[in-house]
Amino acid sequence: MADVNRGNRPLSPHLQVYRLPLAAVTSIMTRITGHALVAGIVLIVWWLAAAVASPGAFACVDWLVRSWLGFIILTGSMWALWYHLLAGLRHMFYDAGYGLEIEQAQKSSQAIIAGSVVLAVLTLIIFFAF
Amino acid sequence: MRYITPRKSAQGLGSAHEGTQHHWAMTVTAVALLILTPLFMITIARAIGLPRELVLAYFARPFPALITGLFVIVGMLHFIKGTRIMIDDYFQGGVRKGAIILSVIFGWAVIATAVYALARMGLGAIVVL
Image 1 (cartoon, one colour):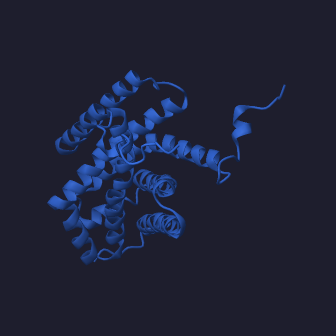
Image 2 (cartoon, rainbow over the protein chains, first blue to last red):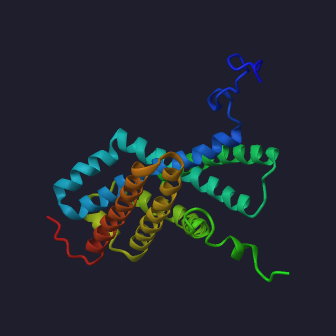
Image 3 (cartoon, rainbow over the protein chains, first blue to last red):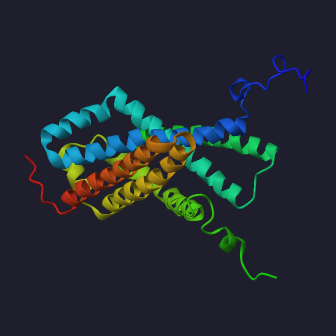
């Protein structure tokens, strides 16, 4: 074993150099949106608690909710919620043994991205129209 | 031949002996949230922007109160179990233990805050100043 080349072997590249397939991107996005949603729910629960606390507390949180930052947090959460919902729905199909082929996962990934954007835009239209 | 279902033979396996229960709890809360999410969005969308007195009156009504309460409770239970998977994946040892404890405490704190606020509004004990 004396002639084994120990220093100059081809090395397997690290995971990060690969371009992630769409199904991998939509999968990790499920986890990211799920955890990011905590911002939206905390803001809403804080707003509810402030409403029962005092007029001053409500005025403060209500200002934040109606500000540009509040709009970004709530609209972002709304999209993230739709995305997480659609991705969760796909998980139920995965669990039942459907959609596990690569092409099917590719298609469902595209459907989740497109569907979440369409639902988010529809939600905003309905919100501002009524 | 063993008269045993695949589910029974998997029950209690995994390093924590509760993997199937965890997965099942996630599935049940996910299905509940599938129904609650659109209802919660409508409920909140109708309340955002109202003055304080109308917010208090709005969440004193049964439908907004029930939908909001259910969404926050089921949502945070789903959150606690969901963060647990993330923590198990990325952290080890003491940090993992601490992160799990923090996540559970945080989740229940959010639930308690929402239930308290809804109860105060529902009981109508608030004097609007």
